Image (cartoon, rainbow, N blue to C red; front, side, top):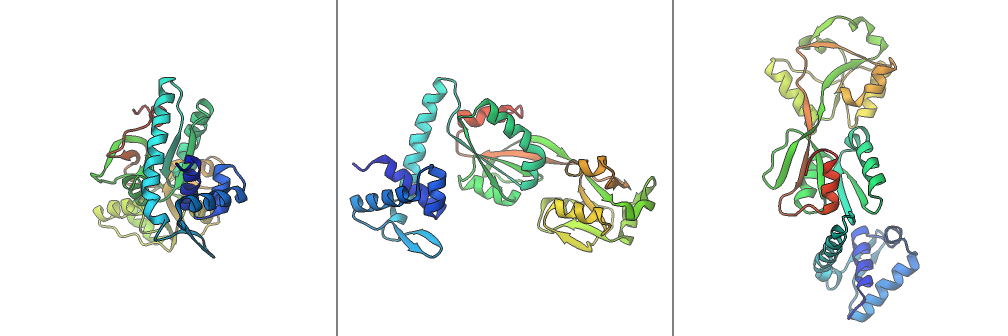
Length: 295
């Protein structure tokens, strides 16, 4: 019988694609990881990896044949250990959380810090991705819970109620101070250089849907991939940006940006919680969801 620890090392190397990264995740030395892989290969009588300049790749005649089974076996063992810990009312194991960088930074950071202080034995894996990517990871079992920009509809995951609200607003720096204190109709914004988040995002689609209903087409002068860059450009007077108020509070409070009084105002959006449809939430995940009054 091969030592279970060797399979854990094999699985971690396969997942990380690198001896160095696997060593960091396992908190052991790289030579120890390499030796464990060689030992497992020796006992099984087959090469499990192809060593390439890109890292460690599963071999077709070895690693790829056993990877899925090893992953399922280790998951079953981890679930069994977690159940024993649950009997002691002590959350354990790993909770994999998926969200965008912005959601992590502005909406989840405090909750994550609070959970970590209460349950330090639980390992939190933060997986940064777009909402559509997080949705796919949930369906593929690579993520335990996702915080997604709404609206998103998919019958292959379990959706919960909105846990955060986002209010899209238009902001500008001092270069456009003439807009302060007066009502600006949506169609007037066509006269100013506009900063918008890139087109393939939930936020951009929400803006387009809103303006289309008003018979207005707003075209960006500059498209950006992230909110932080948009806010920096707005401060420098590059244009008028459309951004959730919740993501620019500091800029508004310290006077670097001001909010335009736009009519009609944009409807609020939400951040929702989704879980894999066919996987039961672990005890640790249930405790995390309680922070959002969900369970």
